Amino acid sequence: MTRLLIEPFQVGFMQRALLAVLLLGVLAGAVGVFVVLRRLAFVGDALTHTVFPGVVIAFLAGQSIFLGALAAGLASALLLTVLTANRRVTADAALAILLTSFFAVGVVLVSRLQSYTADLSAFLFGRVLAVDPSELAQTGLVAAVVLATLVVLRKELLLRAFDPDGAAAMGYRVDLLDLVLNVLIALVVVAAVKAVGTVLVIALIVVPAATARLLTDRVASMVALACGLGALGGWLGLAVSYDVSIQRGVRLASGATIVVILVGFFVVALATGPARRALARRRDSVGVRSPRGGAR
Image (cartoon, rainbow, N blue to C red; front, side):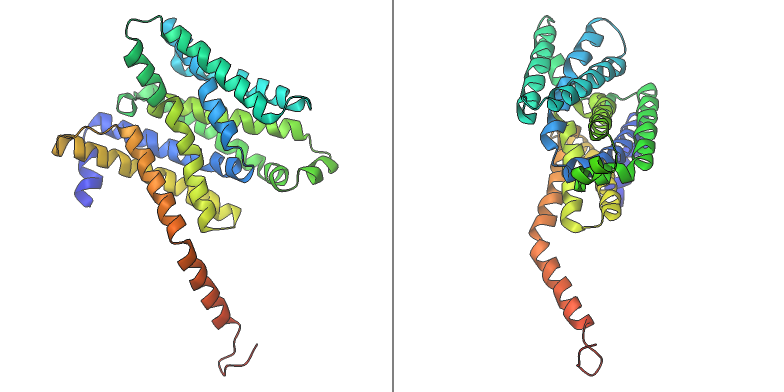
């Protein structure tokens, strides 16, 4: 196990990839808790696809993919908030319209390239092993901004998640809080687009948070678990894909391997849930009895 977790990261590109997935695991895990609590997984999925045309346009123009994704992500977050504020447009309809229209524009643009298939694959599924120092710096900057925002607005976002009517009655701008969360989701997608692509990033956002939700009911513990599981899944995914590809000659895509491991965590947590609940009930039943067997 030590060889598996340490040996692959003796080379520079693997070290950069590891740092990238650790940052993304923590970042996506923290934001993912609010996505899961608000039941916004489809929103996250839509925003992961709406950055696609920005990525393609930036690539065609020879500009920064990060900036292209950022522009498209912020525009789609704003449009989503505006559309869902209209009572005659349902949330699922707004999401479907944005997802399909933005993604279709991206596919139309990328189809103009002769290397269409290879470029489309890279944009959708990422190339974590090709992350360079400048992209790491951009990811670190996005992580700092997103995590700082979550710390500052933690109480307001939680109130919006659990009691939206109460938040509105207390004078909070619910629509503004929705916009903030949508922008944070978009920023996570922007940070992850080069490493894992626009398709797999939704797994980084949702799966660790959903797994943490199975293991605890405390929000603080949920955030810590989601961040830890996201980072651990990234580490193990890189290590396994490297070992199998190099040592055994079976090529495994790093991004997809990370997602498979994260889903494995979820399956284990789901399968062991009844046993954990039974053990908790047994401890509670023992705890409410006195040493002589009477009730406290």
